[in-house]
Amino acid sequence: METSPHARTVAGATAEQLILGLDTFGDITLQPDGSHTHPAQVLRDVVEQAQLADALGVDAITLGEHHRDDFAISSPEIVLGAIAGSTKRILLGTGVTVLSSDDPVRVYERFATLDGVSGGRAEVILGRGSFTESFPLFGYDLADYDTLFAEKLDLFSKLREEGPVTWAGRHRSALVNQGVHPKTEHPGGVPAWIGVGGSPQSVVRSVQIGIPMMLAIIGGDPARFLPFADLYRSAQQELGRDPMPLGVHSPGHVAATDEQAREELWEHFAANRNRIGRERGWPEASRAEFDSEVDSGSLYVGSPETVAKKIAKTVSTLGADRFDLKYANGTMPHAQLMTSIELYGRDVIPRVRELLSASEAVR
Image (cartoon, rainbow, N blue to C red):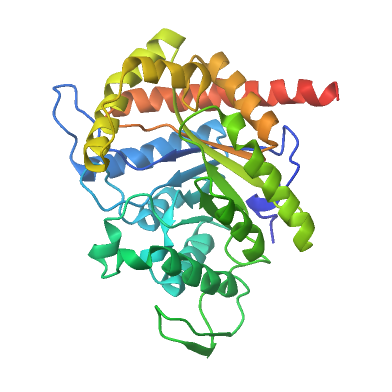
């Protein structure tokens, strides 16, 4: 059997072992005439984007699950299955699967199936969901938001052992010595991460359950998350865990120049932020806020050199073993997304490795 693509996912990764991936929610894009692209076409475009990423040597593609009209992807595993059939090496995952409003057994079966058809390239990032549309849609009470995730995560962790499962909880029928199929071809079951927004409790839970943490850093200086990275590692020592890899997920856009990247992204970023903001009571996005996030926050926007330096700095600061760039942010057209992916795979990734290798050499 060939070595699993996940063999690179290690704690304390070197520059060459670092996983550099891409992420999208399948945002509804704009056509040249200003009309919105049909969701069906957006799904086909996402497959094309993943094919390009694979051809360029990008390590991973993750697709977010949403149930609202500004995103096309509600069933990421199906889109990943389509991608699996037309790619060779890229890791195929979600960012995130909303475990709280799904059934852990069905989630596990779907990803074990994806793992089989893709030759061991499947992974899942589990989350509670920052959007809550799936809870009423599938008959769950938002009052159970925390307990749903904790309980279902506990079951999912047991399913990864791939033996008979005996389990009981409040939100799902009990299992007694129950087998779940299919099995994966590699030890450890379906590779998984837990998406964490930055609460200490979530950091510690990741270590307790033994599933690595993917930090979603979507605003502010990435360095402010260093206490969470430190807590993550100290908890591993205290609980006697083997070192666990740390991942980071942040939004951005790559273009030929810094100015072009900012101008291409701003309008679409603002439209997306303001729509969500109206639902959540946020103030309107300002260009000054946007530029500040690009300059010193968690928007990785600019030329390949600018974006590479910023990624390398974040990876070094947090000791991360993986970085995923959320390359689709609002209604940006497909053609611009393809250019961003091309620059990321062709120029940003090699430059990040070069910068990190240089820093490793002087340590």
